[in-house]
Image (cartoon, rainbow, N blue to C red; front, side, top):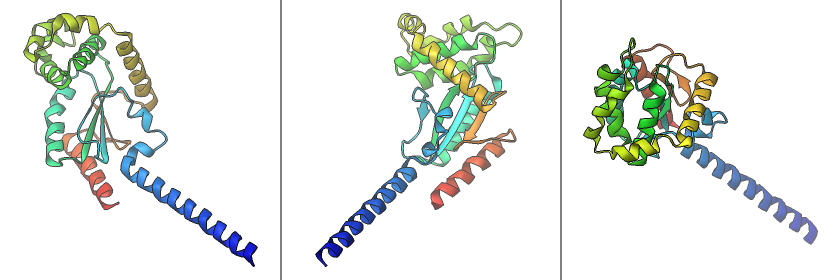
Length: 217
């Protein structure tokens, strides 16, 4: 009889342990949401610049090229979208420097991140884009005359932009560009779902649908 009681008690403990583990795993998946997917790393790398709350369940991944006109045009729209849904969207920036010379501009941007001036620098790049990113005769060197507006230490910027780690992250991003079949910029994914039809309203609809789904979970 004692042996039977011991066996039942042991089985109960094992069952309780399994249930507790399952509940913990479920809570973890709920917490990280999209990031719990096996292929999430191809969308979000440890080096990726992000903007927004760490508690956000909707990840808006944007593959951009600093020399891309459409990327510049979408930038304020994305910020407005995030402002409309405070705390619910995490913006993740990935690089797809398709234009000539754009990889050097990405290096400037990443070097600016080391000085805590990433988003200010990206904003200046987009606003001055027409003056340095001509498709017929790109002149990324002209960008330097606008960088003082960000308050950057330009001497330090030149040193930091040759960091091999920056070149390596561009290589990784371009490998992910190839893996995901990104052919033009900006390339948007919302919790891993691609924006099939390009446009402001289409992006807004995809983001808001994902917000609705995650809010109901």
